[in-house]
Image (cartoon, rainbow, N blue to C red; front, top):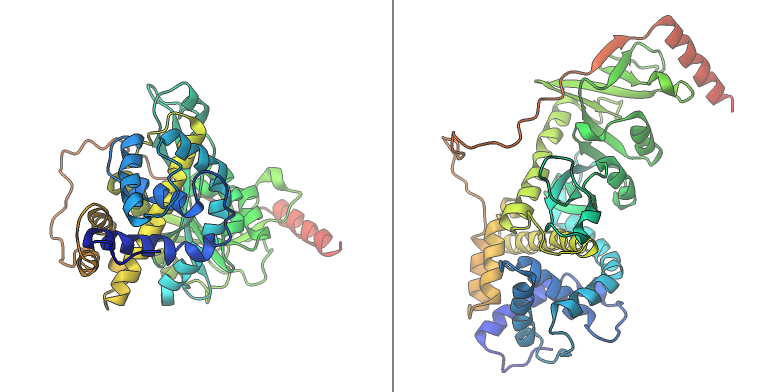
Length: 430
């Protein structure tokens, strides 16, 4: 596919192409049906290059990406030169492309995680949501408004991240007012076997947690004052001091959920793992601390990739743009970690900003292949011990939410114990 007449600058771009397309995407997209218009490989690579681009407008990103494609794929079909043609082709084929691409990226994520793939017997997956802005157009009002004064159209992005290696695992995009739990329900099929879902206080509720257990997904979730827990209900034969039950009064017809409650500082966590040998208090605290990796991923999307606000002026295009931003971050992380690992460096110290800078430099410069590798190998986080904060002390924080507080914890009454025992006997007799 590549000729010997290609110069040094294009050779560096060929390396980007091989990393982003051949080594990562071709095993997944080899069965992608070809049709008229944009070829599948060109469409995917152009989408990635546009998300890695720092150009301020969509048209400028497309022009920059096409200039790279023309030199990296000199024999590609010259069928698309306008953004309208590109986005029409992408919207028509994006679902099938992502369906083929996601399993391949998850396989590479498991390989990149290595010994960090499991913690004990569980695969730790963190879940959280964040809002992204969209242009103030009439078409984008279909995305919904967050309800705040002077707020424009927004989208809710649910992001799942493997907490062992801090690599994205799945994502869903919905309206600004769509609950995070609804988006997570639609992503449960993406979770691997033996998942331990680690989430914040927005992912509670009897029905939702019951559905997770029916799907054989264990969880570690923060709770607050809005949750009422019972003790000494007698539904678990090995009750300990951490054993609690979630059984709202309006769910008397369903069996209570047997859980464990941890208090770590001012944070309260509940988990469906009832055996302390499988999940200790210390391990639970460490897993919840790792949930901060989700915030780092959102920061990489919003600040490093500069995608805090999408540029599409129509709702469906805006959602597609945000989904491909996640895919671009996912592939960028895998590329950087693979390069560091082959250089004998710790891949988990990857700097997303440094990796993105190396990719952008290779796409628009005459750097050699070894120069690109050296730049990527320098994309590591600082090792020195920081002795002072980085944030200015007068920084005007926009968000300062109150902590969820402590859950309501009461001892079960005799009537509740009797109802629970009768309910369990009726369930066992069916």
